[in-house]
Length: 313
Image 1 (cartoon, rainbow, N blue to C red):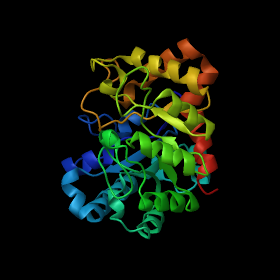
Image 2: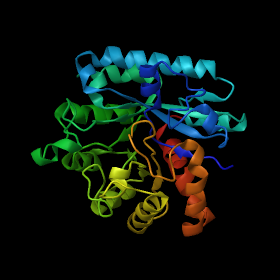
Image 3: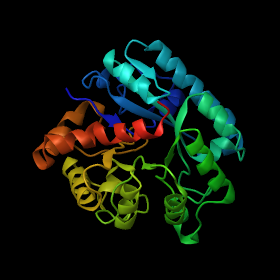
Image 4: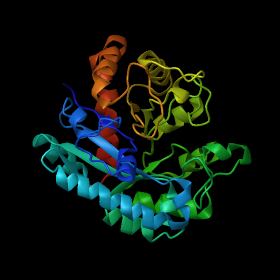
């Protein structure tokens, strides 16, 4: 079976909350048993904070990061954390999956720029600047009516992240915040789990102008599997993912689209794609629709390129 890069899941947070294990968790949408069908995958694991934890954001983030490393230590024969692109290559050569640690929301910084270097030392390689709401960095997608973009602190964070070779992620960011990042970024940035707003008019999706701008910067948008972001009535199938991919290919070209499942961060799934083990059906439909070469880019090639460009060698 073919490999893939998935730029977003919330599995670690949900496992930690339930006291379950990454190896086998049938009630989850992703676990290592299901990943066995896809050798040498690259999976981003996001640390998302429920707003109830915002007053203790850094403390709770440390709890999740500790849990992440404990799970990887227990399963070191099949999956390893990566800090550099060379780590990904090494893992692939050794037949292992690669785990990329990310933060979903700048709340974890607690307004302290120096925290970025600490998180980098702890292995964080990507940060989604906001979740849905306003934080010290910017307004989130749920705050679009305010017209607010990046704050002064948010701009400082963007510059420091690029210095540290951390991926800047604009999923969940307000429209104004997106355009601030587009104007200020010196390196490719990503939208780890966002679809096309022209296909499904949800604030979490990207407009055609945003998709073009992201591509022009060399970035990648990850197709999100949440039915609410795929279809207005919230009832979706794999064919709806294909609709978004087709539109995004028309707008962005074949080098700027990937996967951003949002596994275990979504309450519902497409009826014919309910967990990681069923990804083969999606890849088959992609090959039928777009051919093997473009499908390889969507599966992993495009995100691998960005990881190669943006992470330290």
